[in-house]
Amino acid sequence: MSVLISLKRLKDENVFFILFHVFQLYLGIDAIVRQSIIQLIAHTANQLICVILALVQLSETIKWNSSVDAVDEKTGKSTDRSSFYRALRFEIALAVSTAVLTLVFAFLCVKLLRQFGWNVYKRLGADPKLQARFRQGQIFLLNLKMDGFFHIVFSIFWIVVMTQEGYHNRDAASITWYVFHFVLTVCQFPAPFMARYGMLTENPRIMTVFLIVHGFVAVDFVIILQQSSSSWAFWVLAVCLAIILSITTIVFGSLVVHNFGRGLKPYGKSF
Image (cartoon, rainbow, N blue to C red; front, side, top):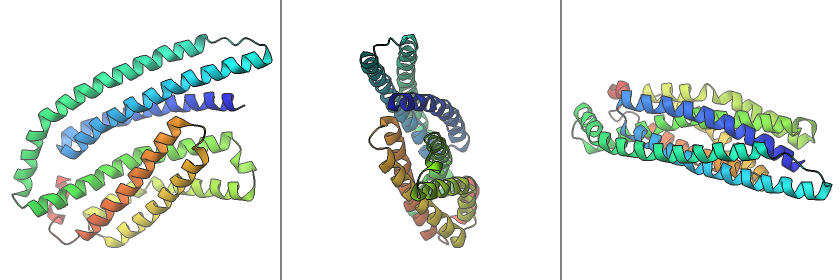
């Protein structure tokens, strides 16, 4: 049964990779349009993360292929493994092509950094404190975009996994968590837009509500990590990334609130 569940999870991982590359396309184009150095660096870092996740998935495919061997020995049956070998070829090609693209993006990123930095200097002037506050705002908005993809996609995937594994039919604690996670997933759809509006209008109440909700999201992902830490390497790395994103979003969200009334509001369109 564990082997079958793991093979279903590999399919979920492939769906994630497709969605992730669509998101990367958006993030890269948006970084060029907005001339955002921070977002461009994040785009390149995401490509590196994608390489790591592709290698993890490759190791999982090899692992579960070995598990099928063990099951065949116990049952005396012979499973057709042609699909495994086909998947291995695709996963090796994915890891190699993604690694090459990462190097290309890193090279282009270095070429664009100086020009984008000069453009920011022309918009804000020479005040280093104002530039620092502006960068903090950019990092927060970048985190919102990352949260809008990673958190929502991971949350939806975990709802699918919980449904497949029957959490809604278990004990009261499992049902309560199932409902709690579902409600938080729904709340995450409007949350980035609410936070962006709160930042640009310098509304501390909106930002406080957002940070509280995001704190619950971080707790939810910690519980997910605890529930899945023993059996799914790809998911463990993904959830750790989600937790790190949650923490950095809360930290930079708090810094953004601290910077309200300190000269950034006129530059809202520059973000």
